[in-house]
Amino acid sequence: MAHALGLSGATLIPWSIYQHKFGGLPPVNVDYPGMAAGHYLRDHPIHHKPVTEHQCDILILGSGAAALTAAWQLKKQGKIGFVMLEGPEPNGNNAGGYDRELSFPTGAHYLSLPSEQSSHVRELLSDLGILKQNMDQARPAYDERLLTNAPEGRLLYQGQWLSDLLPAQDQDSIRFFKLVHQLGRSTGQDKQPLFAIPVALSSQDAQWRQLDQLTFRQWLDQNDYHSATLRWYLNYCCRDDYGQGIDQVSAWAGLHYFASRVQSQAEHASYLVWPDGLAGLSNKIRAYINFQGTNIQEFQSQPIPQAMAGFATKIIEHPDYVEVWTASYYGQQIHTACFKARQVICAMPLYMAARLVENIQQYGFDPSQHLPAYAPWLVSNFTLKQYPEELKNEPLAWDNVVYEGKGLGYVVATHQWIRVAKPPRTVFTAYTALDFDKPDKIRYWLRHASKKELLEKASDDLLQVYGKRFWQCVEHVNITVRGHAMATPLPRRFENTGLLALQQHHSRLLFAHADLSGYSIFEEAAWWGYQAAKHIIKQDLG
Image (cartoon, rainbow, N blue to C red; front, side, top):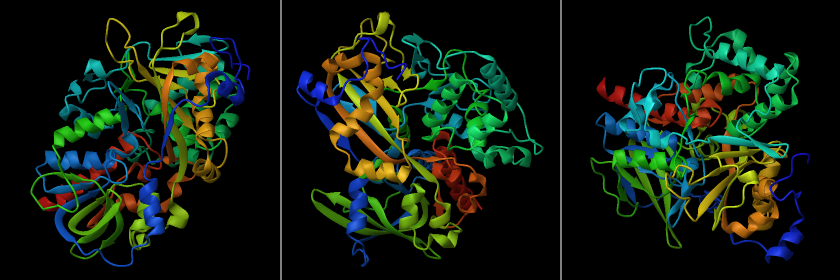
């Protein structure tokens, strides 16, 4: 590759040379979240109702952004008799990892500053003490410790680091971002913003919804945006937020990425970040709710928020209650139980809900037609015993990206640490959107790939930056495989009547997940959790 030169001036070197030079692989751990639970459901179909039975008021299935937002809002409004069944992975795609003094993300790593339309997220951040004041204004005041420190980002381009991820300000890029700023301040005929977060608050104006019929690349072609550096940047941004590039995502989604956030950026930072990514925010929500930990075997219905390990195996709605069959691990044993809840919030990905909800077609959702497309990812944490030498002593940024890199760059877990000297150890988290083939084929490859093959994918950008010397700094590597990491907004998403049906559905079983929006960011997941909690509260009041 033309831009594959790092500090050492070396191009990528065959794996056999690394093995000879450094004695084989660094210690590598590979985690497949949810795989054990998924294999249990696949290999042990449940035909008989569990013997143990429990009663509860509200049962939340899942522990990701939608589930935690619903729990926060229920607690805030005085509805405390709820139980959260954690699911296969506590915090879901917002999970994190820990290694002595270090913490790092194993899922999502930042929260963009929420727009004015994302009032539900601003309300949450205010309750958590993260948003300090001016919640209703265009640019609220946030806890400065959580805003990204400078330098926020950098791009390795033609052998040098640039402070802007867009390599060149040419006529195409100037024209594109002029349009983006115009769209970000415009409304449709229904007086709604053309592009809003959450998507549900965006304009329904048919003129703009027609963009959903095209891929982003087709729209760029039609509008004469041919700059190679602009196209690379737009492709990178789509891969970063949607898991697929401009050839796959819709033109509406491509423009939404930029236009929806025009008015929400602070003067000196764009993101709220934690060393362990959104696990830090998730744990802050958990502290606000003050869950009591329990387990299925010892569960007792109480008027307090409770959280327990385990996952649903079947969901059946009855006229007077929702029946949820559950399973949890106790050592090598599986314990099963049945919960009967007055209300259930199904805050799990739709590909899981489609398997667990009995006759999900009755809710207007046909899995054979309506499931969103899911993008596979690797989230790889390289624990370093020392920092690699930087090109011309350029300072590390929080986000470090390689032009035309196969991955999405890497973030530095200790970037927010304010100290006189760097900590002796750190973690570089490399994000890789696996879009080199069709998602189903990539998921098959992931199931069979060796540690060596996964590590080669995970380390590609880092080796372009630092060359072979990088391995001398590596203590060990933890790779998290997310085969269904995020929903991707392909063209004709707004024609998906199944998603619309679940968005509008209200019964004892409520659906709440970012999948309902057709793409996966915290604000979208939180929106549906917030809506589910509001529906329960409103129903109980009236």
